[in-house]
Length: 167
Length: 65
Image (cartoon, rainbow over all chains, first blue to last red; front, side):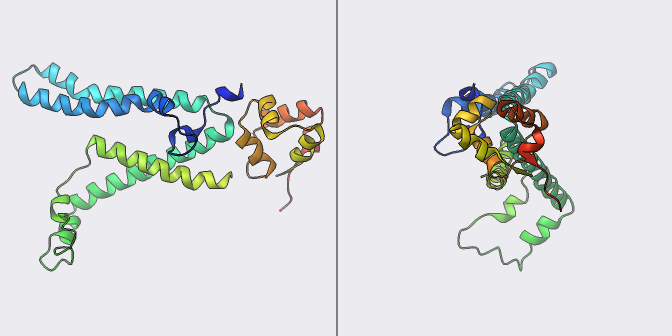
């Protein structure tokens, strides 16, 4: 029975990492990334396709995202109570922080605060040695892949924080 | 919450993995309960009590503030 239990470490790089378990749980979300790209490409090439087809193609990645959530829920259900709690805490941490970062970014952008910080002539960021284009960054909106990437990053961070509590 | 799980397990000469198998949880969960870093749910506490044939309050004790 014990061998059948899922553990959160299966998804975290380390000695217990399982590529097979990772693919089973996160396969849909990973597959949705090239689908977004191919969908965009297809819509760009077929500009005159029907409205309904455009809607369907645009929503395919989100449908894949729902299947991913289903996989994550099943994975969490297969854990024992402590790991389930730990994973849910990390998920909540990730969702909350992703929501906060995305909405804060959009709000700051909407209020013109990002432009005021990064685009003013006396900005200290203008002559950065690394040459990051901060001014260009302020034009950026959070797209689906970046939001998912942010979600994963916060999940790993949250998992690391909460895992300490039970070790 | 304090508990006597480690002593009871040692008395039976079970490893953490053995106890985890019997309780249908992971070894890490048994370790977290023994080190008092995780309080088990009521169903799991009942399972522990049933396994050791003892009342719950003899295994788990709520600490006074």
